[in-house]
Image (cartoon, rainbow, N blue to C red; front, side, top):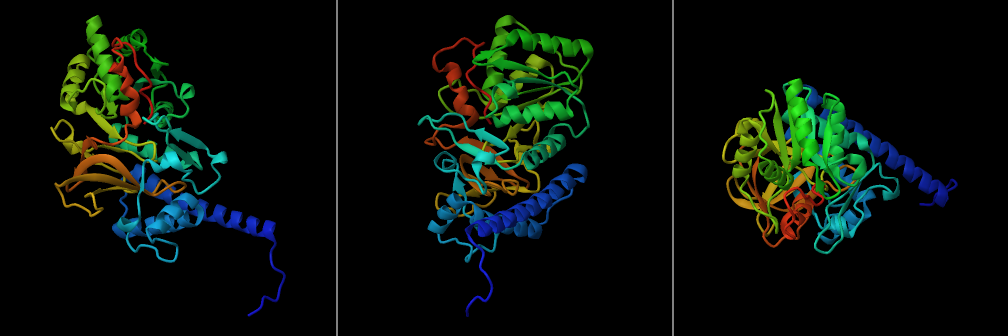
Length: 397
């Protein structure tokens, strides 16, 4: 059969492809924004069928427009002509892939957000390019609002982190900047500069909040909070925070830095700041993800904290051969984040955990895994026997 009309030239074809991509990506983002907004406002769930449908359509979109991800999937026999029927069958890329390729459905040169993992033992960070800030902002605000301030509190944010404008490649600094700006009382403060933990400014901000009877949220990485406790102990400073105050901890404990059991850390934080351990909440996020997990409300204060997720984010626990494990069996975590529309939908991590009926319990990282993320940056805290007031780049999520 022969074409009878004039055929589009190369420029016309590129324009048609660009328009098709623009319309398709905008439609998917709008659909995701509706899901995120509905959950933020009312806790509206996402059914298994709806999640599966969205995951398959986003994955097909990524196979068409994300060359690196498509090549990886093709090596596993997954192509646009042989799509999986279930979201669980979508091939996850390893987190290391973000170091080796631009995993984006668009030209990374026009990324609205560009977040880097911490430096690795090979000295090369992973990079997550995001086409728009809209989904990232919507996801982080919805997750934090429902997990950390479901009571509607306008907290004063005391961030044991660098200022976002001083570390723009840090997803954690960006996240807390948006949260403080949108959900805070207008008096947020930041207490890391370069490699220095600003203990004096933190203590002054804490005393000011107590004087104002302003409930606070102290936010920082696990190692940052350990070093804060050490520094305050050296100064013999202890506080009783205003009622309604809370702490958000993120990051792990692996590496060369001083290791402290998470339960012990929470006990020390509760004692130092005069709050209940149930007011300390662990956030689990990754630079390679758009969305975050938090301790479930029911498990706060319990020895084993269960991570819960928003409805567009799901976790799987796999054995070394990639087979899903039943509830209670320890394996490697894989995340499927629908909000990763412009990068890669499914991510295989180096983290270990086990499923529960309502989420999963995070156990830490693979012993032989490449060091990365919050924990890696924090390992410089003790590696050269720095005094407790010194911090080395604790802020990357």
